[in-house]
Length: 149
Image 1: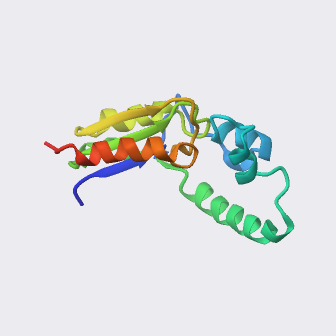
Image 2: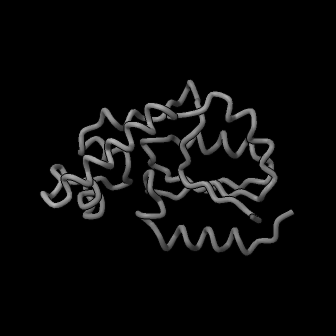
């Protein structure tokens, strides 16, 4: 591995900026937290008010898996102290309007990882690679083409 890319990464415990409890959000609040434009067709298709009948089972199974993971491993209170061990050039890509994991988390990753670059994608939420794939590809390709230290 020669480099690392983090996109709106969960994992840190920041008492001043806790991650949202996504399991407590209804679909409208979830879209608001996840997307820069919660009324966009993409947001409504990704998180409908009511899942389509054919997607009901997979939606329930996905939420169950998320609940198991989120309740058991929501964050790691010790992770921040180990970030200095990452020696790879690291791109930290963050959506400006992420309502799940605020940019304070991205900045904390950036502060902890010596060879990191923090890039904020304007007007985008928690899923910049989904909301603005072309922008993210351009940012990542530029990062990956830049020679590391």
